[in-house]
Length: 482
Image (cartoon, rainbow, N blue to C red):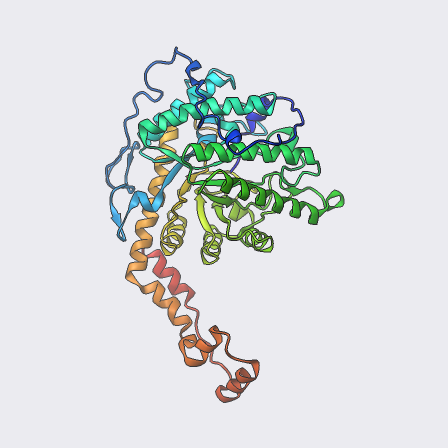
């Protein structure tokens, strides 16, 4: 999960604050929940649709040449006894779709959507939220995801920021009631503002730690108020640039205490959504503490948090860590920690997080093999943490990109269902391990055999035969379903 780079220019100078004390739970609930509705200030000049000329996207089948139609994603179609939309649970990322402007470290913004007025005002934020729901409705998806600071402008104080957020959330609640759409997850943006340059939960400054806690507190509250099903922690600044000035143990301990406090607050306000950690190895820090699935899982287990969190796996982050997306997903699955997938991909020729829409059919098939084995992703889903290329500047490109990504994963689902249904690949894997189906193999898997007994077996059996791994056959079988 990344925030568009251009937004750093909109952030105000900050004031150090501390957490308010002595409030009851009722005092600290989301303002939008308690009736704060200032969204009426939304500008009146915008009339009609935000996306005129773009129809509601429909399924037309593989033979269609219409770029504004689904070829493989048929929401109501049953695959392995479950509707395709329930396998996918697609979500649109507000930050890339409505805050991305095409800027990069070497170039100015290239995108300015017709409804944008060039400001980061509250009025503009309300307008964007209306555009968001029109986009979601026309695309035919039921979920969206957000950072607190991309849907509402940061204020000069925490109180002002919260007031801005309450106004936008109040409008979002109204639009959700009208459409039936709600957040797959929300999150707090703890990496853009200068106050977080040394980290948030891992900052060496207790005042920054407190500010981050207050921001997450509010973000969890508004996610709860909006009916969000999950809440994500992505620690873009939770890491280090050098160990020479870092107390590694203290920072890890602080991060664990931060997560434990978040869990306590979640329970205190009655939020039943799933907490998710999103692993990433680096960028913007040189070393990020939730490097990959294995690292994040080990951290959660060490600090007694494994029962409170699952993982949000992003494919581009997997490749940055030196893994395939399939590897990270499978490891999360077998650990019982696969909670959500940020659907995107990177570019093999670059070494950074490019956040491209996934359009590779074989990779999508591998992804869906894991999802099927996992029985689906609910209450998680597929969030398109992906952005248009800098050179794609037409409004319709927003639709085309999401249609392409959704069709790719839908095609992967169809392929994976046929592959598993045929049984050839599962049988090949089963055969590789068939000696463990013997009596002694079963005893080994139960932990009931000593080294002495195994040495005796070696003397009885002699030298083990060489058996083929059949990798080429496995690849041939896989490719025959693409």
